[in-house]
Every structure is written in structure tokens, then in C-alpha cells.
Length: 392
Image: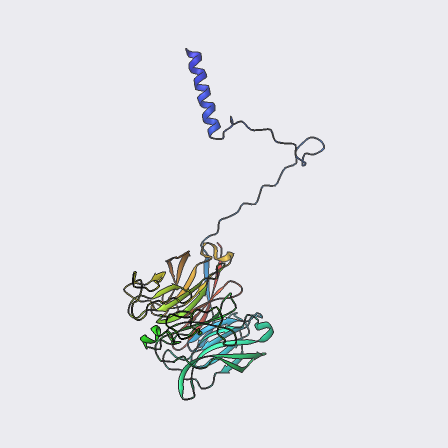
């Protein structure tokens, strides 16, 4: 009886050890290795270097330029020069994005009428800037007796800019309110433009208007053949969406090329929208989610209050760690930078950064080196801040 119990106990221990991969686990003998030395001893093999999972980045903000007046947007040339628009009507060129880099160029846009929210706004450099020197800006100007938002193209010669052509000259009203105009080149090579409703809400639902929507055009201003024809429109135009109130942010998701649009709500419901061709986002009929109303719902909205969400960009690169792929959005009213996580059609708020540290923030721009540049919008003494991420 004792022998039977001892045998049973031995089998149980052996089974448990095998299940846990312990010393009693049965293994096949290792095949001969080419690393066995002539004397019969096995040379030591190097252990693989340990890999550390990505971490939350450490952020270091540094003021790189100060004493500016509402710097609306930033763009970087392949040679490192930093182009900045001031809402008053100035295109400034700095030798680099380093702290206190010298200003090497200054061009004043003519016929400007910069009042309240109107003025010189978005800037984008041509994807082939190194070869053609083309610079695109959106400006509120008086032309032919009308106050218009226009997309202008300049050509750089060294640090001087010469007017090249109108990309959009007519059709967009300017206003001291709801006049957001961001310009960005997408991975499709097209120029994307956000356009506020100029405080005339009904224009956002007019299928033949150019206010209150996102626009998409060729580099010379032509209408792409794959632009949608909006429901009720007489023809295909530069308009890609409708029903947007005052969009000031355009961001392209890395890897997918999906387009995200960030806009101001009225007293409620700032929005982050996934841009789809021909979609109607509801303004001024609805704000925020409105299931069953026939409009495209936002992926995120602020609810009963507003933050005055402005520009947005995705951050990429190993230095951003677990934050790589996040959407960063500046806020004017709340004076901070907000991180959002994006997973398919789920957009969720995460951290609030630099809360009231620099005042109102308008534009986040990812530089070629992976650092993030922010512009302040306080009215005077404005700054450009570089935020450098690092892994701890």
C-alpha cells in the first residue's frame, strides 16, 4: 500500500513539473551547433539585447521665437528654414527652428484686411518646394471691392517671396468672425483648405457655396476630377464637405492617410470629424452627435461647453513612445494642448498639457525632426514653442 501511494505521488509530481515546464519536462537533445569549438566545448552565445517597451515621453518645451503678433501657422522647408504667418499679413522666414534663430526674410501680403479673426492664416510649402520654391497661404484681402478669403501662391527666391498666382481668388467670403482657414498638403498631393462659414450659418448648407466646409484643390487651383459633387450642387467644385461651422484644423493620420478636421462649436460641441467625400456635418441645423438626422456625426465632441479647438496634428517617431500616433489639438479658450487617442473611429481625450502655461494656443506643427512646434495667439508678445519628446 505504501509503495502504491509513493508511486502515485511520484507520478503526480512529475506531471505537475511537466505542465510547468520545470526540470522534469522532457526535451529533445539539442542538435550539434556550429559554434562548438574543436576541443568539444561550446562557445558562449550572446544573449539578445533586452528590449524596453515604449514609455510615456518626457516633454521639454523651449521658446524659440518671441515678440510676435498672432503667429497663425508654421511650415518647415527641407533645408530647415521656418516659415511663419502673422495674422496682420506678414510671412516671416527664420534661418531654422532653433531658439533665437535669425529672421532672414519678411514679406508683407498686399491689400490685407486683418480684422478680429480675419487676416493671414494658414501656410503650406509645396511637396516639391526644394525644386519649385512654391509657398501657399490663405489671406483675407480686399480685391475688386470685395472682402475675400483667397489662397495665394508665392515663389521663393532665396529668402524673398514673389507673388506667383491666385489659387483661389473668388467665391469665399471673409469675415471678422468664423474665418478659420488652414491649408495643408495631403498625402494625395492635393491642397486641402478649411473654411469657416463667415458668420453666415446658412452658407454651410448651400451646396454651391465655398464657406462652411473643407475644400480640396490641385496645386494650380484646379478642381480634382475625383472631388465629390455635393448633394444639390450644380457641378463639381473645390468643395469636399459641407455643414462645417469654423474648422481650423486639418490632420492626416500616418499610415492610413485619413483626414481629420477640427472645428469650433458655437456655445457647445467643438468637434473632431473624420472627413469623407461629400459628407454633411450638420451645421447650423445640428451640432455634435445627432443620430437619425441624416448628418455625419463627429468622432468626438466637447459636449455642453467649448474649448475653442484650433489646429491639430498627429505625432510620430520613436521618441514619442506610447504617444506615437496620437492626435494633438491646440485650444484657444482653455489655453492648453490636448492629446487624443485614435483607434479606428474611436477618438478619446487623454492628457491636458501646458495648461495656461503659454496662454492661448492655436497651431501645433510636427517638424521633420519629430519635435512639435506650437504658436500662441495672445495678441501681443506671442511666441513659438518647440516641444521636444524623449524616452526616459
